[in-house]
Amino acid sequence: MPNRSQTLFAAAKNVIPGGVNSPVRAFRNVDGEPFFVDHAEGCRIRDVDGKEMIDYVGTWGPAILGHAPAAVREAIVSTAQHGVSFGIPNPLEVEIAEKIVEWVPSVEKVRMVNSGTEATMTAIRLARGYTGRDLIIKFQGCYHGHVDSLLVSAGSGALTHGKPDSAGIPKDFAALTLSLPFNDEAAVRDAFLKYPDRIAAVILEPIPANAGLIFPRPGYLAFLREITRQHDSILIFDEVMTGFRLAKGGVQEITGVIPDLTAMGKVIGGGLPVGAFGGKAEIMNHLAPLGPVYQAGTLSGNPLAMAAGLAQLRELERLDGYRKLEAAGAQFEETTRAALKKAGKNYTLHRVGSMFCLFFTEAPIFSVEDVKKADFAAFNRFFWACLERGVYFAPSQYEAGFISLAHDEEAIARTAEVVAECLQA
Ligand code: KE4
Image: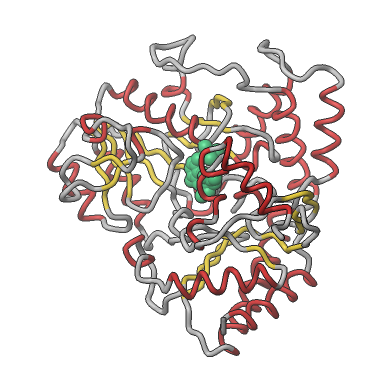
């Protein structure tokens, strides 16, 4: 007898491609079928069959306070008394813009959009419009949303023109994107030597979290800052995942490496659809209606989304959130390392702040090529064994995990017990 999730998934597949509104949710990376959620609160979710789990996906990053925090719920409800959408400037847009400018070192001006994809897509267009150049450098293993010019992998050789990572992207379009290995300074140097004065921008996740969680080698971000400055190319940090998560000002605050433009999202929406991009006023002022680079959006600056995001940012400040997230992350790392030792596994664990990834390999991880060497079958067994015992990790070795302010010591201690049991799966 199928359970409710199975019945719902069968119905979903009749009317939604693959039964999901975003591919990773289909659990194909772990050779299974998804559960359907009924309720989410704090660090726990409950599926439609009543099974409760400790959640380390946190709707892929936004749930930094935990699910449905009271402050965010109340902000949405009270704002909705005034209206749901205006398409007219409203005070909340100014408040959140001022907060983002205050928190993020690179941001002098910011434009709100409705997803991280919109943020990176427009940052690329702005960089091309500002420089008058066409080529873009991205890095293998970095994901920036489903943007045509960024769904591109390395061509036959890293320095040849990129090839589409998806059907529907004209090869001539992909050819304008160079997809280079991450953490490889020589590859970037060669690209600028080969295409002097033609590279509009270099875009990267400063700590890639879409190929697990990969750390930049010491000096790598500063190198990218220097070489883009030398060549009058725009440095874009995609902090959709790391922004407002690892620190108020994201990785650029932690490292002191300040990009020209920053793409943002997730946390600043409090769970509602939001993205943003910002940077130097000199560059941002090239956007319509001031300048020649067009961008627009019906729901950009939507009052409910702005109120939810503002409430979330204010709570992070009020609760001294980043210090507490670091403490929770440290407890998670310590207890997970103890579980690995107990299980006799020397897997590579990367953790920074409240983000982590357990790689099912003992090899060091510096690039997505290293991640490809992981034991994916062992990861899949581990994923399902943990889910069975009430711990939900991201359904892919290529995804990062997220700890929230709602993950208390008891939940993290329970997780470590489950991890120790499941490492033998
Ligand atoms: P969205 O368009 O999904 O809001 O953001 C795209 C995006 C841009 N940049 C980075 C660094 C991102 O991680 C993302 C989206 N992250 C994925 C999780 N790996 C969203 C989950 C999904 O695709 O369903």
